[in-house]
Image (cartoon, rainbow, N blue to C red):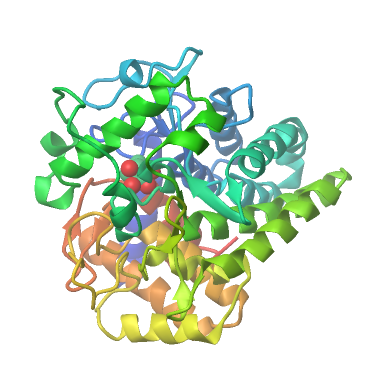
Length: 420
Ligand code: GLC
C-alpha cells in the first residue's frame, strides 16, 4: 500500500466518525444501528480522541446520560427516535429519560477513558474528575449483581456484545421463544440475512427481553428465575482489565483504591473458574454448571486481562494456522463455524485490537503484529466493514462502521500509536 492510500484511509476513517455523529453521540453505522451503543461508543471516543479530544469527552458524557440510578450503563441509549431498528424503546419499556435498553454491554469504558485521559491530561482532567464516580458506580453494579464465583454473568446474549456466539448455544436451548408474538425484524432489511442471527435465535432473544421487562428489570429476580444466565469468559476478562485501568485512574486522581483492589482480587480468582479442563478458557452455563465448550474470540481476551497461560497461545497459533485472517470469532475447526454469520466465524477488527494489545502487553509481539497486519489488510483491501470472513476476507455486515474506523486510527493504521 502506498503512503497516499494510507493517508486517504486516515481521512476516510475520520470522515466515518464525523458522519456517524448524531450530535454528541456516534452511531455504530447509519441505518442498521441508529442509536448510541455502549461499547461501540467507547471505541468511537478512543478513535475520535486522535483528532478531537474534546469531542471524545462529549461522547463519554452522552453515554453516561443513560446511566441508571442503580449504576448500570445500558447497552443502547435511545437519545432520539430513529427509524429502522427493532427492538426499539417501546419494546424495552424502560421508564427513564433518555430511554434506554434494559441490559448492559462489555465495560471497555474505563480502559478507553484512561487512554483518552492520558493522551491529554490537560484537556481531560476536569472531565475525568467529573465522571470518575459514575465509572465506579457502574463497576460496583457489575460486582454486586453479576459476579458469581468471580465470573461475570450475562442475562442476555446481546449483553456480551457477541450476540450469536457459540458460547450461548446450550444455554439458549432452555429459552422458550414460541410465545413472543408477531414482530418484524429490521436488521435483515439492511444486510443479507445469511450474515445475521437466525429467526429461532431472534425469538429467544425477544423472549428474554420480555421476561426481564415484565419483571421490572429486577436484577435479583432475574438472577433467580431467568432461563438464561451464563458466565461470559470475554466479559470477565474485559471487566478485570477495566478494573485495573480504573485503579490507575483512581491513583492518578488521589482517590481511595481498596474497593477496586478487592474487585481485581475477586475477578482474578474467578478467572480460574473459567478454565475448562479440556485446556482452555471457556464460558460457563450458570444454570447447569457446565462449560459451554467454545473456544471463541472471548477466550482470547485473556492476555488483555493480564493472564498468559501457554495453552492459550498454542490454541491461538493452531487457529491462526487455519485461516488467512485472524482472529476468527469461532474455532474454524468446529462444526458450528460459519465464516460469514456474525459471531459464529467472522473476524472483527475491534476484537483483534483488544486481543493484540493484550498479546503485546504480555510480550507476544510477533503474534500481536500478525493480527495488526491482518486487520490493516482487511481494511485496506475491503473498507471499514463491520466484520469479514477469516477465510478469504469477504466483507460483511454494515459498512462505514465507527469502531472499525476508530481502531484504524488508534491501532491498525500505519499512523496509529498501536495501542493505548
Ligand atoms: C451487534 C454486535 C454488538 C454491537 C452492536 C452495534 O449487536 O454484536 O457487539 O455493539 O451490534 O454495533
